[in-house]
Structures are given as C-alpha cells and as structure tokens.
Length: 338
Image 1 (cartoon, rainbow, N blue to C red):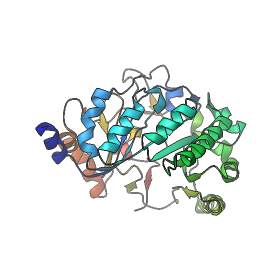
Image 2 (spheres, rainbow, N blue to C red; image 1 turned 120 degrees about the vertical axis):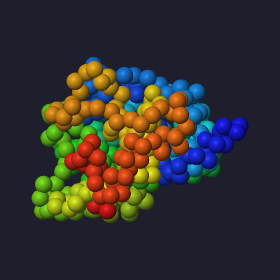
Image 3 (tube, one colour; image 1 turned 180 degrees about the vertical axis):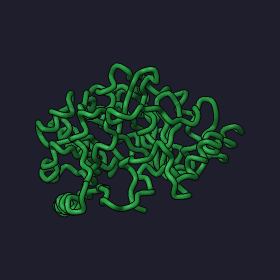
Image 4 (cartoon, one colour; image 1 turned 135 degrees about the vertical axis):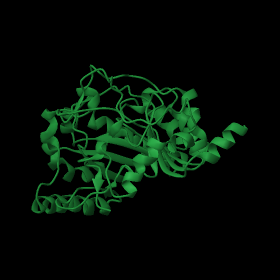
C-alpha cells in the first residue's frame, strides 16, 4: 500500500495516457503498418498484471485511452482494465473496428462505465470495406445502432459515440456523405485524421498534405462544409490540417502532458514512435527512412514517475519547450502551429 501511494505521489499530472492493450488485429487495413509490416510484426496482449503498474498514474490523469496498433476487444481483459481505470478516477475510452461487438458485449461496455467508444472508418459503404479489409461499414452502423438503443434502455448517456475517420486521398469525397450515413445513431463526434504514418512508398499517394495555400484553403472549406452539416445533426467534427509556410512546433499527440504505453509495457512519447516491430527487420517509414522505436523504460521495471523524470525523457520534452525538435519528430505531420 505504501509503495502504491509513493508511486501515485511521484507520478506526473497528465492530460491522458494511451495504452496499447493489444497489437493483435482481426482486420488488414491497407494503410496500416501492421498490414505492411506483417512479417516483422510482434503480436501480443498487455497482461492485466503489467497494466496494474499504471493504476497509480491513472489517479493523476484525466483520460486513459485503451488502444494502440491493434483491436482492443481481442484482449479478454479489456473491460476489466476499463473498470480499473474508472475506479482510479479518470475517464476511459477506446477505439474499435466493431467486428467483435455484439449485443452482449455492448451491454457490458455500457455497464462498465466507459466514457467514449470510437469506431474506425475510412470511407462510406463498400468503399470503406475496400481499404479496411476484414471490416464492414454496415456492421459498424449496426453496432452503433445497438449501442444507441442499449444506452436508452439502461438510461445511460455514456459511452459517447465517436467516429475515428481516416481521410485518404482516394476516398476524399466520402467524407461529405458521412454525416448523412450516421444521422440518428447518436454519434456525437467525428475526428478526422490523415495518413500521418506512411508505412511504405506505395501509400504516399494516399496522404493529404496541402502543398500550396490555395490547396489548403480548398481542403479547409470542404471540411468546414461537412462540419456545418454534422453540426445540424448534433455531430461535432474535428480536424487538423497544416497550412503551408507556417512554422510547426506543437504536437497534436501532446507529448508534454501525455505518453504512450505499448503492449510490452514500454513507455514512449506517442504511438507513432513505438510500433511493435522487430528491430532486426528492415522496416522503413515512407519507404525511405529506417524506423526505430523510441522508448524510455518499461512500467514493469520502474514507476511511471521515475521513467518520466529520466534524463533522456526530460531532454526530449525540453526540446519542445525550447522551440527545437528532436530529430525523430522532424517533418512529422502531427506538428502544428501553436
């Protein structure tokens, strides 16, 4: 008990902790590093025993998000982990492809008190299924419908239903159809992301990065129009795109007040620098640069407070405070104007 109290006391105050509960997945999305790097991928579940090492840190954290590079519902202890985080006093969420959900599982999700349940999409109708192979757009809508009805039956407002939408260049027109497809299902928020981690050169064409101010303004106007439509139906739409020519020194991953824990217990600033791949394999980011994990310690070996205060980790964060960028963060699309 004393050790737990000391660990909690030494933990940093954080906005969120992202925890990869599994690196297994039942889908094969064409743009996902897991699909591209399948020969080097290391599949594993985070054990409940290792997860418990994080509980003291949860007491000083606003949000715990139980998702990384895999499908969270493949970890049989997912809902136990959610309850443990809730009991520690923080909000809890996860993102799923929806293929493992059914009425019984959805009931348990609502009962455990989860605050946010997000569903991943990358298109509308069959166009989503083309790139998110092994998933079904219609099945996701059915899951959301069952969740909406279950919440009403139980008199619960949570979990809030979010959509984690991957905006690909080849499917860019689908975003305009999305609010109509989700109308009446109780979706409160759509978070639009672009392909920030390009696992191979062949996928470079799917990125959406404005190269001119005119292109930026056109894309912004397009997304703002969707935002207005969604607002009429109670859906907030969030996006972050970079305007060419602007200096980018702040990170959307909030590396100064958040961190990521992979399914082997290793702590990193964000999910993009901690893929579960073998270092012996020649894994490249965007097909050009050699990829290497950036980690600062394992939660099984040391309390989070000790890892957070390590000289190397403090130096990483100091670079952002001093308007410098660590080399691993240079040219990262997750940077934006402060």
